[in-house]
Image (cartoon, rainbow, N blue to C red; front, side, top):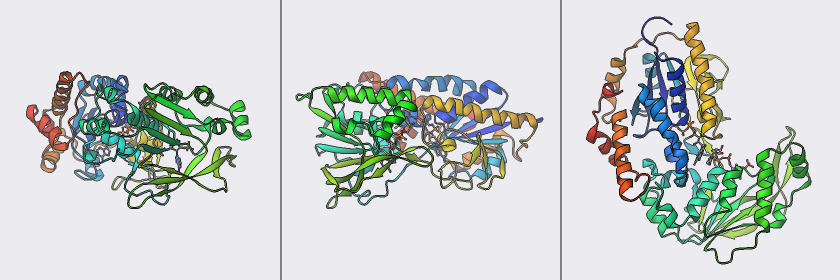
Length: 469
Ligand SMILES: Cc1cc2nc3c(=O)[nH]c(=O)nc-3n(C[C@H](O)[C@H](O)[C@H](O)COP(=O)(O)OP(=O)(O)OC[C@H]3O[C@@H](n4cnc5c(N)ncnc54)[C@H](O)[C@@H]3O)c2cc1C
Ligand SMILES: NC(=O)c1ccc[n+]([C@@H]2O[C@H](COP(=O)([O-])OP(=O)(O)OC[C@H]3O[C@@H](n4cnc5c(N)ncnc54)[C@H](OP(=O)(O)O)[C@@H]3O)[C@@H](O)[C@H]2O)c1
């Protein structure tokens, strides 16, 4: 490509967008990169998903800061693509647009009672305790002794810990203040976790499962009869079982053999081969009916849960957290695969549902491959997308946009969004949160409303994006 420097918009400043920015910056020093983000803060689920008691992982933000923001990528926070600026407008200003918008909602169970008050998606609980400004006003009733968590993946592990850590442990974290206040008053003593498949298919990774078995003041219980592997799972574990599955079965066996800790103030019970059939309650959650499953091998070789025809068991509880996965939402005027909930793409190059290429449009992270994978998965994924973009730049497949100057997009944004948060604005937020944290010996005390975030950003930062980087 000849002419002005290519300009790339990355939509979504979560881990995938940040990895894409740093990979692009590394391979193409001359490309101008703008990171659009609907929140006033960057780093997506690294800030708003990763559990407050896992602070070590949050240090990845320093790498993003160093490899993207300090290397001249502009942060344009509080700008929602599809609302404040359209896809077509982005295409008029940038040679390429990389969508990195993640998975913004939850997958539903499709059972009766799912929407009763007291039945929440784990996505909501997670966003609430992590200080996501759109969720701070939710009210979780933690007055009941028993909670049922549906699903046994790593998000479930996070919410189980948040429900069972002591206030003393929570106070050392960056859990949002409103959540800390509610969790301090929590009456929850028992968390029942429903895995629809067996112990060999639990979706926890082993480190997260091990951690659940070693929480202070928490008795973890596994029923011996539910731990016994059925013949299909036994054969699968012996022939094809992953390292994680074998380790998980070993850990669960070890947990099941431990004598119960009668003195522990809180208890976790991991149930297996159990699915919720209905959530019941008169105006709010009072119980969950659960059915037993067996493992069957499907035609494609995968191991599935199939309901066994026998009477249901009822578990009384006051709160249900459905942790059965995240789900992406479509963006206006961008193709969307309604079956897989991703942008249809080939190695990150977005195409229409019938396969026609969309020049200059790319995807990365959860919006590219679905809502699975740890932070590091997004690095490899970003490198794949960026290498396709680099190839398209090299072959001249990316045409210069009709309005290629930075000043043109800045003028449009200034017209549309009053409070754009620049990199300076984000640093002002970051500084203030860390300062507030220092006083309380916490990593940070989060500002959890848009107003607080925007006024912290405005206090020390110019608002015009042109002043950034
Ligand atoms: C609760 C939870 C805990 C996790 N904990 C860990 C962990 O401890 N360790 C680990 O390795 N992995 C963890 N993960 C996985 C990891 O967080 C994901 O792999 C990663 O965040 C996916 O990155 P992403 O950028 O695709 O999506 P996201 O992190 O969701 O980022 C997407 C970004 O796009 C923005 N956005 C969305 N729509 C728009 C729009 N229209 N305009 C502008 N911006 C937009 C969003 O606000 C968000 O900032 C966790 C995941 C969850 C859900
Ligand atoms: N500490 C960490 O590293 C960390 C922390 C949080 C999240 N993450 C990552 O983020 C990604 C998302 O995590 P996640 O926990 O949301 O997803 P996940 O790992 O896919 O787990 C989803 C769970 O929901 C169950 N489920 C799905 N549909 C169901 C239904 N209809 N009925 C009952 N159960 C159902 C799944 O069971 P089946 O297995 O039977 O489908 C599984 O147990 C994962 O890759 C995870 O590793 C990592």
